[in-house]
Image 1 (cartoon, rainbow, N blue to C red):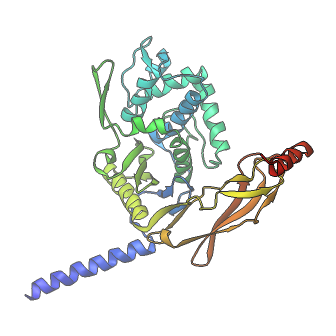
Image 2 (cartoon, helix red, strand yellow):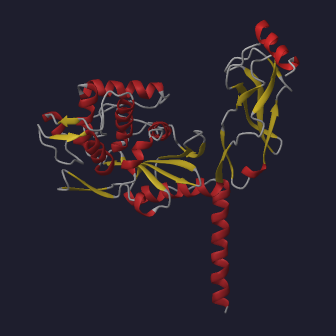
Image 3 (cartoon, one colour):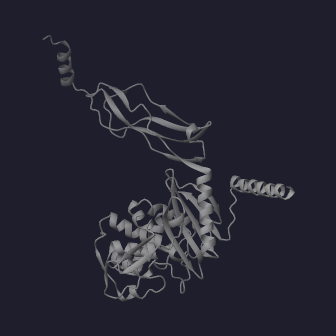
Length: 377
């Protein structure tokens, strides 16, 4: 009986210790740098040493994929384009799908190879297809990184191979930033959620390097990487109850420790936070005097806030609107303000806009209305 009681007390003490760790936000890890971010707001939920520039290995390919998806969005290339593999692309080495010089593969299948199998040769072939040369594509990678505010990042190649690189570096925060941008392209989930698939008409099998896709609830991406210089890295993404998280782990000593840390980060985010998406207030129109129509439709902002778990239902929404407007009203005119508060603290606010034009009644319009009102049939 004493042993049973002792065991019970030990378990209870462990649980209390674990609860304190979650409450204080302390996550044990052997990785050099970690961060977890909510994707729609960019709010950082937890970080440790997130601004140290480190080699990212194949997590580099998030930027490569971002530029490819943006090129598709801008109609510069299409998923059905056939990419002809150059000798240079075929010679990349490392993780690959063994593309041959002169071989052709669609952009769609190339993306699948990059995302699922982390294929360096496919990444290079896509880069050449988009920009004409690897050098031009890498320049575009660095330009896009600067646009996104990724101040701790410099790319030397499209795939993260780092045997000969000296300044191919990024940070956990910057990886989260470019991951956030890539996730705006919903098509990417068609690839990042694949566990096993094939290319070359079924003759070549692919298995996702991101094991979390198979066993972590809500996992939907994104990219793994490992080299002897970089250690084991990952940008792991998952979505639950409408909240999309991005967990970045850099320079972990083993694959299992990397994956375990990513799970801890995601678990921490889902256990402690929730996403509040502002609902449209009930008052969606305002009366308009002297207008050709009697009211104008209102356009409200649609902010999202990351809140402590269990508090979203306590958010209060207040609006400041006049009783009516006087024509003319122009679409986009600021007509009021909406404020969101939680327990007396302002979360945010935004302008309420007119959603359409309302022209002012002219003399002839007034005359017709007069006739309409007083004509006796």
